[in-house]
Image 1 (cartoon, helix red, strand yellow):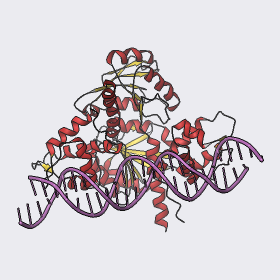
Image 2 (tube, each protein chain N blue to C red):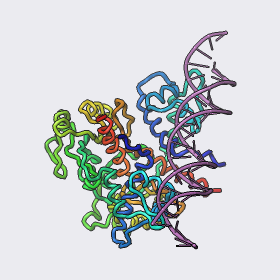
Image 3 (spheres, rainbow over the protein chains, first blue to last red):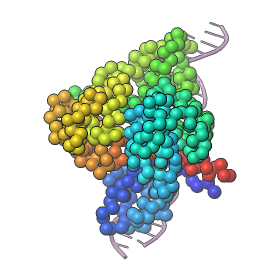
Image 4 (tube, chains in turn orange, red, yellow, brown):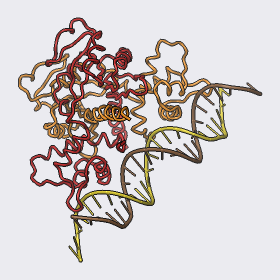
Length: 214
Length: 214
DNA sequence: TAGATTGTTAATCGATTAACAATC
DNA sequence: TAGATTGTTAATCGATTAACAATC
């Protein structure tokens, strides 16, 4: 019973729809059209309809989609009602920031523990989450059945940490280190590629300057 | 003299090439083939050649690309040699993490100041960067000709901060808030969309469970 | 010369957008 | 009924990949 797989592009838009719908909470009118949604988010209306068709029970011609139902369907599909456990390796500034951020709960993610090799950090806790020695990783992952790992160590150590994670049975890695990771086939790496984002930003700036000159 | 615009996908791959090339620093042999690069980064070799053709003086048949030249061309193209100034609004955990992160210098970005509306933060400094009241934003942006703004406030305040930034002449916004921003035409928003990344990660997990069941 | 590798032209693939029929 | 909106089928567009000629 394989449900039709949703494209990566669609998958990435779904949280945006959900967030926007939730922001309309105050409004009484219970329906919204794909056209409205598309306009608000600078998307094409047909694209929105196609995306929603894949995860919801559909809208009604002339009326649109029931907002509450849509929110429910999106949360259901994205798994925001079920919580996945994650561990974080690297308790530096970025690691601490992620540990402290309480918004992940809303997305169905709970960071259960952090790991670092810095002796002075081990045993301390950040925002109620304890920081362990890296040796403890296998045991904790197995005990708590953790499948998601977050890497926030400096780039030169990222691959090594990644290998340890996959050895522990982690099969989804969120990589904040500016490094390319090599992993077994069944493991997914999602790069939070700040260098790539910055490239887009600064290039926009420099091309703007050039075009202003003309 | 409009240089051929590079696609967004290409632009995002360039920092990856650069990073990998730099990591080969130890090796003596001065050349690398597109095939090698592609294999190491799990990309197609023709794609790598096409990407590199757009920003470098090219390689030599049978030999490959000169690594040092390639690194130079990539840094040149990505503007890592010139520094852009940026301001950050929102000096919470994430904002502080970014202020503290010293790696941006390498990418040609310097965060010159931070802003917050929390009175207890104003006047303090993080990693040598001062935190100002939001009122000071226009003056500072104009004086230092700041064109890049980083938003690390909670989602409900993101649009308001964004509007202030564009009013100050900022035309490239790096948005870490989980909110869709509406901006004038000439302004670019780059969303660091953690919710989207998480959606991909957790979906991989749940689809894996389903396929394992078969 | 032979062979590896580049760079280009053509084919494929997938996502977005346009056109339109179905429906409340 | 008329009109707005959905949902689907076809057309377009752009990026990736394959095929191949050029070259050191």
